[in-house]
Length: 157
Image (cartoon, rainbow, N blue to C red; front, side):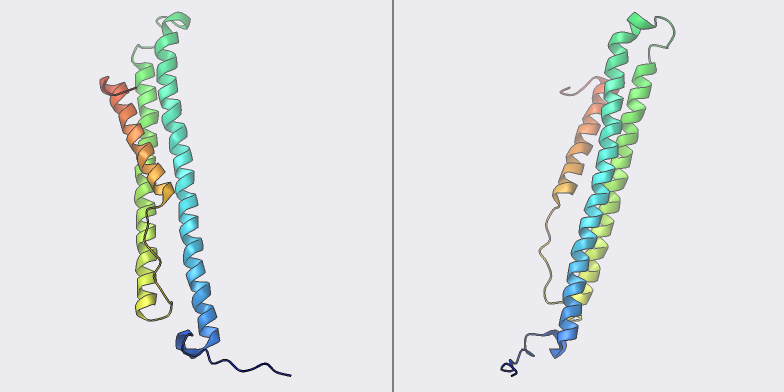
């Protein structure tokens, strides 16, 4: 005993359930790809945070301890140069990660807009600022402030 036939052709893309399912899979693949981009940016944040943190710690540690443990063995600028180089490396890595993430998200949006204009997907998702991207930008500001503090003695730290 078959159930009543329901006419849903007005709601389906192309009037086909197969096309509708394909459209849903495509929309979900965009979401998965965006989450993958966010995870990649989180990896960059983790590495950059380590570099910035180690650079600042090494600078502070050797600045206060070096005269006591190794007088005359290291040039007085060595902790500053080494710590600053790690911080700069972390900030550069973060800048490259933010730019790469922005370009990736921009390409996803362009593909999604094209599929929407061809009526292959139902709707365009809202564009929002990712929390991961926001954290990356905040860490970038902290890194720049650390560079200013160590190199020029300016800043709140």
